Structure formats: structure tokens, C-alpha cells
Image 1 (tube, one colour):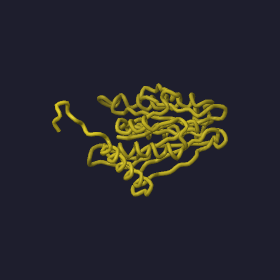
Image 2 (cartoon, helix red, strand yellow):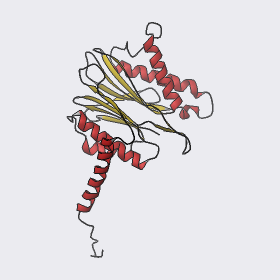
Image 3 (cartoon, rainbow, N blue to C red):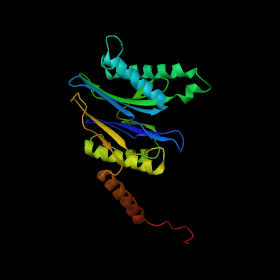
Image 4 (cartoon, rainbow, N blue to C red):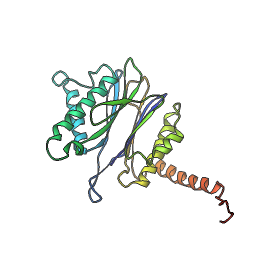
Length: 248
């Protein structure tokens, strides 16, 4: 499984993904699920992937090849005139890869599925964030839906819903997402560190701060421990339940 979050803030975009990939409890590996490209001063783009590893790696490889030789391997995300067209191109590539594998065996169409988050900014427009489905179609983040999750989403979602504000500075947004990942990791063995993060600050038109949070990271361990302590303290501060008949 996977857990990835793309968040649209007033200051730009924040992307975060785990790195665990498993095909059963005895076959667990670490693979990057976040990929970024930039032409400084013109565009910065990040893609995160969830689903069948062979499918997602094929999609990223195709996008990479088309960017390295755009004159011979068009279309390319470096040539797309808008983030909408980037999302459309990535969706077409994902659909192409899935369809190529769909006829190779029983239920291959579902077995090779994947979902992607694409975010970035191209000169002349604002930062934009999209979630792309296996069919190749996509939806865009908005003020009503300012973040997307893919993979194992249910455990970390309540924390984001309670803590998200569009004017959060990036350091607070990173803290919020790390707590969301911490809750997911504690609840599901298929999500784990290392965690990759990427910031795309509005109008810089280049990739911003990026980091990998490894196991044993002092900051992550500190907020994980303090968050657990705070939850226990909040729980004990709440009034006890009293049955209507007075029994305890």
C-alpha cells in the first residue's frame, strides 16, 4: 500500500509520500513514489504515485524519456503549455500503460491500476493540483477540496481535516502532514518511513525545499511522542461518561 498527500496552500503546494511497497507480509521493499522535474524560471512539477509498482514505474519512465528528447518523443511535460495539459498528458500516459497490460491475463485491467497526484506551476498561471484516476481522467483541487490523498487514506484524513487552513505556513503544513503520516503508520503496516516531501512555493517557478524523513529523525520522533502525550492528556481531561441510571 501507499500513502501520499498533495496539499494546495495560499503559499503554494506541499507534496508528501511514504516509500513502503509490499506484496505480502514477507515481501516488503522501499521504493520512491515521488518524482519532480523543473525548468527554473519556467515550471516546476511533482508527481506522486500509488498502485501497481510496475505500472507507476512505467508511467514515470515514459514521462522521463519524453522530456529528455522532446523533439523526438513528443508530447512532454516540458512542452505542455499549462498544468491542465500536464495533467492530461500524465493521465493519457497512465491509461496507455494500463491498457497495454490489460490483455496480458485475467483481471489484468484491475491488477495494473494506479492513481497519481500531479502538482506544479507553469509561468503565467497559479499553482495547480490534480488527482488522476486509472482511466486517465482527473479532478482539480479547489478551495472546497484543497488536498488530495491516495493509497491508505482513512487513518490520516481526520488530522488534516481538523488542522488544515489555507494560510498555513509551510513549516506548519509539514508538521500537520507528518502527524497525518504518523497516525497512518501506527495504524497500518503497509505504510512506513522514509517519508519524502517537496515544497513548490508560488511564483518561484522552481522546486523548493525537499527532504527525506528517515527512521530515527529527531524532529519526527519528537512530534510523534508529543502528539501521543497530548492525545492522552486531552482524553483524560474530558468528562467521564455517566449512564442515565447513575451506574458506573
